[in-house]
Image (tube, rainbow, N blue to C red; front, side, top):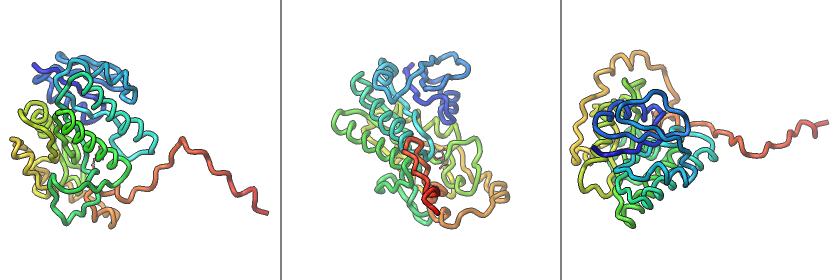
Amino acid sequence: MKTVLITGATGDVGSHLRRELASKYKLRLSDRRPLEGKGKNEIFVKADISKMADALKITKGVDAIVHLGGYSVEGPWQGILQANIIGCYNVFEAARRNGVKRIVFPTSNHAVGFYRRDQTIDHRVYPRPDGRYGVSKVFGEALGSLYADKYGMEFLMVRIGNVNPLPIDKRRLSIWVSPRDIAQLVSIGIDHPGIKFEIVFGISRNKRAWYDNSNAYRLGYKPQDDAESYAAEVLAREKPGDPVAELYQGGIFTVAEEVPNPAAPRKKSSARKKK
Ligand code: 15L
């Protein structure tokens, strides 16, 4: 049985994968936060991936890595920088130093969020990130490409839509992925022989998909679910959204307000200058 490291294991996607993959692999789970419960085939190692020493410790001796750790939504630059840029570099570089070849990187629909909804895109399009978070995912894709070409490491880049037991709104009818379908894709990323560097979309077989996911199908992906089964109830409760956001695949990320950086020096109030 392969030993697989899952970083960011306490998050939403991590919790689904932990449950879905428990019988297939020995799981080494890591996170900065404590993990609740303990399954039969798993161990937990507390780690902060923004520190190289921690990244080296958790990647030692595993057969593959599923690197979920980091910010999973738009956030302030300092947070994204530490967790998603420095953290990702540390995990890939630590894997290289420890001789771990295979990495599954859950990137995001937000790496291509500024493509319009009236377009169908495939794995070959140039990235169009819709925020700092999307940029950090493009960074991970680029770093993986470098490590594949330069060091012969192997990457499956999964541009995940939205992992959820059920699709939650109209946008997610296009990008939803069920827990069992994302687990199947991640397993392909861990086990499929001969992967060098591939990009696929982490979505179920959704009728309303904006993605041509033929690269995933080529690798043997057979999604079992389709968001369309829930479309009637989802659309019945849908409220009108921001019309600009609705033009783009990334949705509200494309019109999100700037998130203030808590580390930035405060501006002096101009109130005192007023007479
Ligand atoms: C993502 O990439 C996020 O990780 C997730 O929290 C959702 O926001 C998802 O995209 C989405 O677009 O629904």
